[in-house]
Structure formats: structure tokens, C-alpha cells
Length: 146
Image 1 (tube, rainbow, N blue to C red):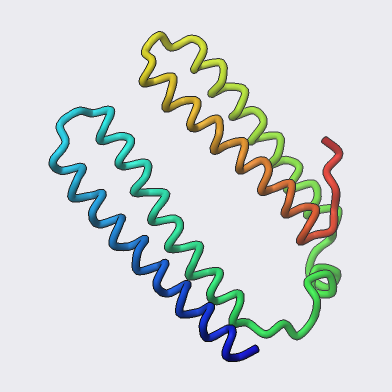
Image 2: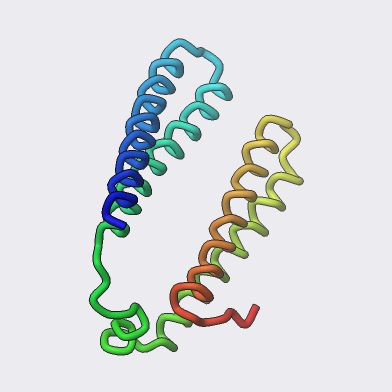
């Protein structure tokens, strides 16, 4: 298992390196572009790439951590499962509202490029909603009422 984890760690490190290189190249490319729409798209991709590097570092740390007790045991000691459920359900409601607002705005904006950007935000908010739901179900063992 230790050898496998060492290999996984190397793969994650390589992916982090690639994400950081890509982030730098995107920033350099954005300097060459004059159109605001193109810059905006490049900036969005660059921020996603930066996020990927952060998430991969967290993943590597999580995989290296040896669990001493189950998450459910920790949760029972430190947090009220109902409070956790309520907080995440509030986040779900916020994500739903953001999806609705961005969708409505996309319908109202006549500029196709702006619509595309807004619809991309809608897709991202839907992914956030799905991730929070999966967190409730998978990590906390709670199911949403929605």
C-alpha cells in the first residue's frame, strides 16, 4: 500500500506541476490578447486551473493522512449532525437561487457572448449544488430533503 501511495503522490505532484505551468501560460496568453471576451475566458480557465492545483494539494494531504477514527465518530464528538445538515441545505438553497438568477439573466441579455458566460456560470453552480448534495450523502451520511 505504501508503494502504491508513493506512486499516487508522484502522479498528483506531476498534475500539480502541469496545472501551475498551464496557469502561467494562460496568464502570458491573456497579455497577448486584446479582446475583452477572450481575456475573460482565459481568466476563468486560469482561475479554474489555480483551483485544481489547490484541490490536488488538499487531496494529496488527505490521502497521506492516516485516519484514527471514522468521520462519523468525529462528527458525533464535535458537531451536531442536524446543524451540519441545516448548514449544507442552506448552501443548497443558495446554489439553487444562483442557478435561477443566472439563468434568468442569460435569457434577458441580448449579447450571445454574455449569454454563454452566464450559462457557464449556471453549469458551475449546478456542479456546486451536486457536490454539496454528494457531500451530505457521502461524507455525512445525510440525505437532502430536496
